[in-house]
Amino acid sequence: MKENVGTVDRIGRSVVGPALMAVGYQRWGGRHGNLSGLLAIVGGALIIESAITRVCPINGLLGLDTRSPDQIERDLRQAQIAYREGRTAGARQSRPQIRS
Image 1: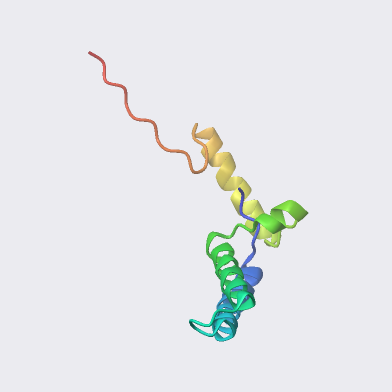
Image 2: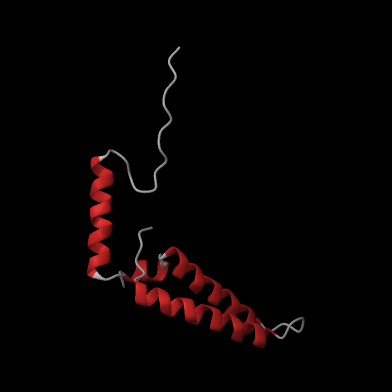
């Protein structure tokens, strides 16, 4: 998937994710278990993951992109350079063939 989480959104997710995990841990209550607490922990972890990877599947489904126009333009330039050099973003470099 392509990046669709901007800097401001990323900072917000970096704050909200751990806060949601902390609230979930308190609601979970250790060994007593509370399903809402466990769901809050998992949700917080997913929010943190989207902040780290800059990819949010829900944003993708809704067609949202919170990156600034400058970030989008820079990513487009990098993709064009990679295309001109004959490689795709994230692709492995091919191994040299050994001739016998």
